[in-house]
Length: 525
Image (tube, rainbow, N blue to C red; front, top):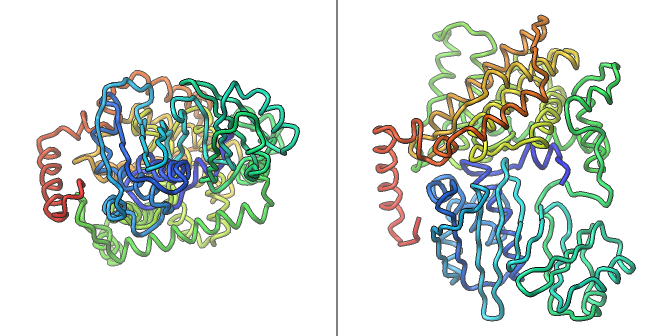
């Protein structure tokens, strides 16, 4: 699937501590619900012991997201924290088990769903920033991203005749016959579902299921983009020095078949959500299952009284970044930009700096667009998932994107924006992911502040003509290679770094005991 700024980079709008866990799991759950025609009595969830999820699924939002998706909710639904109990209250029996199957991807979900009429299995992976892919249905390999209408048709036989018939009679993006486990599933990707008359007329027809899109920007029949790497973008620009935000606009207009007004309106809506969340964070947030309490209110008070070191706009950036992180940790509404774990550095820095410069929401939206196309290059080539790449994939990517946004706010050139991005990412290669007490708060809060501070420094350096030396595409590729050299223990598994300090373990035990005592209903949380 071709990367979209609004699908893969700036979004989704969500609640929860981790987009890789909560938002992606929710999308998987919604697809699984439709696979069962919205009716099931039993759900078995299995995680590979060698992956990241056995240690993180309950504290980083996988359970919350998955069961919310199975309820049919969206990622910003205020009921999400109670989704497991709500699903159980409907009479559904839930099982969660750890197995040893050596799944290649650390964020692999294996679901078995049963009703009185049928049983289906589904295997899916969370690829970072809320994105996911269903890779197996009933033992048959598939590839479903949730970016279009999916009509799934079970047939007897090899399905080739059905593929030809569907291609002739229906305007599909793609019709594929998947075979495995002694059966055939025809997958029809399109802008609408295949009707019953056509489906039931296929030779060997057994049953049909229809899966609705779960992404905000869908794919078309011939989805194209003008470029997918920084080098390709520079070739496309051809020395015209088009501002980065305008290149991002052209990219997303082509990718999503959207108008200029539609793209700008989508990003302005995101800016408005971010500003409301910042205000909520500064006013104060509460949530029992968290490591840190409300801290940014005190920072705001001291900043207003002049009791902090004079750091200019940086102090406002720190305030807004910490406010957003506190909203995230209290299950408030955030934007995964590019992830929930790194949700604060980019939007917090952009809004704070723009306000300090007297700029309006139009300029904030342009800056976020500029950052978004930088994120496209990362998502196309690599990942935002800390389980795959460590915190360099989250905080490092965020810093890289923030730097471009900062240069854009000043009206800097395309060359300067790219230089700032390269320098910001270079300085964060190798950053590990090691959340204390298995919550995405410590050292995540500090890393978000560091990402924003680093980006601001690199933006100023680029504006002053500092040489990044290494091209951005090569920096992204380097981070990808470094990730392969990182041990699993420091990639969001709760098995290394600060996660295994005595204090972290004591905090984890304390929070676990508190959560179990508060639950008291045997819901399995």
